[in-house]
Length: 79
Image 1 (tube, rainbow, N blue to C red):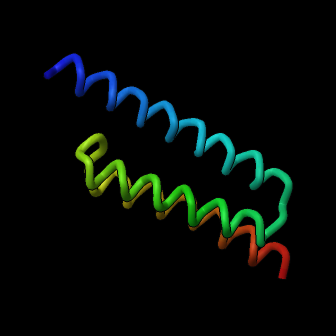
Image 2 (image 1 turned 180 degrees about the horizontal axis):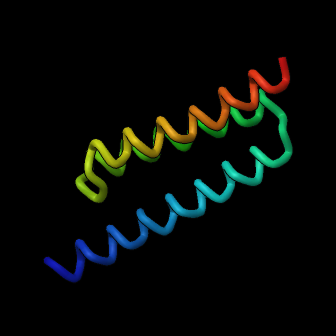
């Protein structure tokens, strides 16, 4: 059971890291619409990880908050 959980959690964590990297690359491009959609998918994945117990609920919330902060900073910069 432990080994099974571990492999599932590692896979989820790995996919989350990939998603965060994808968000950062889109952020580098500076397209606000693309970043907003990417933020939505990233937030969904974070919530799913938190609900499954791979990540703590507040950790997921903190990460989502930081990503939203980056998006809002870019929006104010563009305006």
